[in-house]
Figure (cartoon, rainbow, N blue to C red):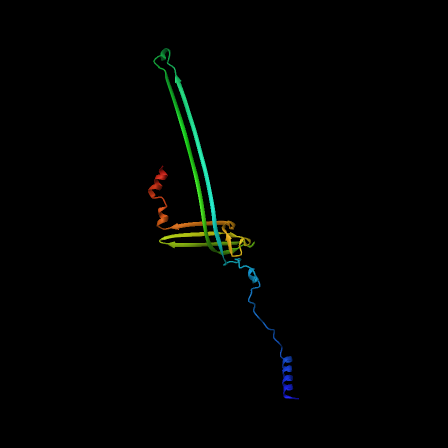
Amino acid sequence: MGYKAVIILLTAVLMLTVPAEPAAAASLWTDTGPAASMYADRKAHAVGDIITIIISESSSASRTGKAENTKSGKTDLQAGTGIFRWLADASAGYSDSFKTQGTIANSNNVSAKLTVQVVEVKPNGNMVVSGTQSIKQNGEEQRITITGVVRPDDVRADNTVLSTYVADAQIRIDGQGPLARKQRQGVLSQILNILL
């Protein structure tokens, strides 16, 4: 038996006696959730995920009121007779007129983009979102806060949702600084408004 044959025989015996271990490899892709497929869109679906709300709100309201009231009356007394001769002819009259008219018009437009975070996922899959954006410039601060509930079906492929699709939406815009203070009435004006 040659040298090469002995090596081949020993290799064959070792392969038969040593149990083979299966090869293990970790996957680069997750097997669960919306991101399970490498072709799926990356949309918010869990607590801690972020989603961009496109705020485009417009509202207007108007009301007109009018009231008018007129009252008048007249009384005539004739001269007295008999022992009441000293009473002369007399007449009295009165009139009262009341008229008022008012118009109220209100219009609001808000446009912004705000990225919020998913703070809760309800049993039906709807996501409760909340977020605040604060911008400060030259002593003026503007803060936009939004909270609400987003349906996963309303989230677009680019992970955005229109504010008109946010249920129970609460959009709040607050301003602080010299300019915001100038827009408020002074104390004297407020007192006069209460008194008058």
